[in-house]
Length: 410
Image (cartoon, one colour):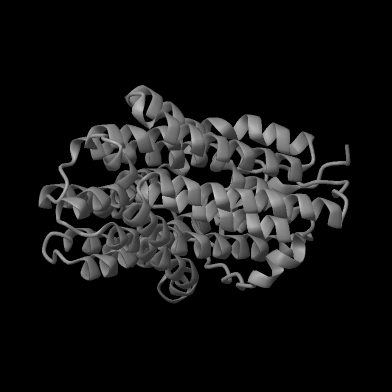
């Protein structure tokens, strides 16, 4: 209990940040359609978010070293607040794309600072409990943020103002805490080639995870509108996706530690393709069927990043883990930047089913590549422990720390 109290300010900031920033993507999609933006323009907003996310991941450690944790957090939270408040002042898709860069910058920067702060204060004895609470807080905040869309009218200043207030409120716990600010860690070097050197399959897996997650979260509301869901049903649709991914972590983690992770990745991708087919087939069977399909989609796709990351770390040395985690986050961002604009253009040109055909093809490519890699080299004997990896910052590898200790070969 004392541990939780000591980190209460940071965890409260995570919740408020999730509530403020997590609702922007679906709200932008619904608002954009109501304001006569094209579907391709709505997709660009999602890509802009992840472009800002990448900039924030790279810049945040450097800004912390210059002005400290609290001031850097305030700067990033202010950028996100400005991006939300200005939406209904400048109703233009190009301007909104610039504002979404600010929201992505805010998310990456704030998470980098919180995770660096946690890392500096954790010990090997407290790390497991603290990380467990951190994951629950992160997933719960994300889930609640999706549900907020059911009560926020699209294209309304009040809606964006509420999200901006929540984002701004995230400043308070961090800036008024009496906890001493830690020393600033060195920024991890960004070496994308390291990920490919350690595991080509792990690299492709995180890219496919970025393609899948960004398409669903950023463009999924367009699909929901196209198949007749209302705004409150779209909120449940996205929440079911997040909940499915959360429920998958324990059984998938057990499988990934017990069996060859390449088989697990291939099985997840087969499941993802089946979930894509089910989502399309069940789109006319009522809201309950659509929500069930979304939950299945999250169950099969969200764990792919963590399994791919674990597979890559199986072939890395202890001194490479932080940089490898940063490289995986970079590759995830690459897939996430490209995916929304492409998926939205497909929906615009070929209808809502085309998004899931696109996602299925990405997973078919991962299956084929996984089978090819299984012929290229045998599985590693001593594997690292499976760890659920939040896709939050380049420094997440440092926070996971001892969680990736190697286990004896089976």
